[in-house]
Length: 500
Picture 1 (tube, rainbow, N blue to C red):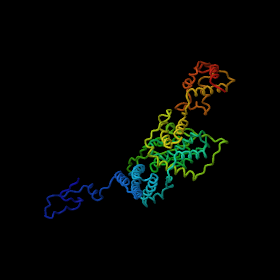
Picture 2: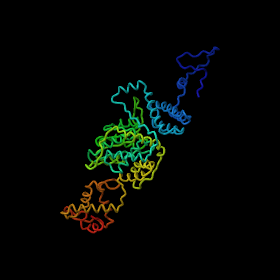
Picture 3: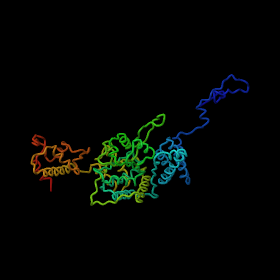
Picture 4: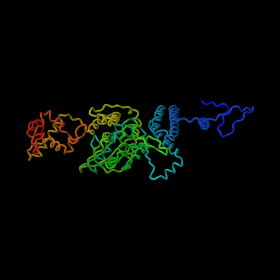
């Protein structure tokens, strides 16, 4: 509280007041600048106070005025978003809860939020902002959201339609198609989870369908942004501005020597991921969000830190017998799927918040984190999707259910094939040479074996052979005595367990 006695004067440079009774034994004090500012401008609520006030106004809106009050609230708060005083994500979340409290329909809320936010931010720019943008190089970044489908959507049927659609254009396995459908829905329901797995679209060589698959994702994912060359700063500034679904092509060249971009993509794996940069002439520290869905296409493998945060869709070149359609953009069918996905997400995102589905016991650590949001979506879809999602999780993580005995029999069959291929050379094999022969076939599990997906080791080889009574021994190979095995050691087990 401010109390100024005797009567104050607003400026020390002005002459003092004269008392009417002629007394001037007291000198009037100078009014503090803070009080002058308060008197001139009045009390202006802080941005979060304004957000709370608008939310309260929306939540108590009477029937017949609800959408209009929501529209005005969003338009007003959009100006604070444009000024960087509030985050768009927190405005969306808070106003969505308030609008649901007054019984507005979810799809109606989403449409109002989209239109009023855009209009409010444009108005905040004013003519000066528009002119500056027109003079800037390049084109303005506009990523409109799909308009939600007018009616409630059968999620299980939508997911099946997504599977059928991707198979029209790209050669993928059933588990891969199921994973892609769930990930596409995940981009629309990002607000319902705390993890967004990167989608790694890989192939051993070019011309395997990676770009086509990215284009398909761009037709059904939420706010897709395709790029073959994006800098780290452009990445986090774009995410902060519009939170797109990033679709990065030719990442084998982009990520090779770009540690900063890898760090940005790594940090966006969890909600709240961000980078700190200084901004403006006074170098004010500012926080930029990196939280965004992201698909990355490349030849080969992702760097290990990104790979552990990813679900991999490993593509192979199409055989002549495999027929797919040539991709064409602007398909009406894809637009319908995107609109239905948007509506399904709006109706179900609250149910996905905090979901903790039961996961296959083989999934753990980051692999479990990556699949948890997709399996939560599958459980919400219902029908046969809970089972399909868990099978896909195991298959795409290289953890398809195979017990050690079946793996052991597969190993015996492959060892017999190795010996058969060198029938003209009866010399025993060292363990090192045997492993070299086993991992040469990329279709077999030995080249990427175990949890770490590395070539099978001599210890792992011995562990699989031990139940069959097979142990390595000293053998003469390459004119040296090494640990290894001879064909006669396997004669009995080949007869018992391996059938032609």
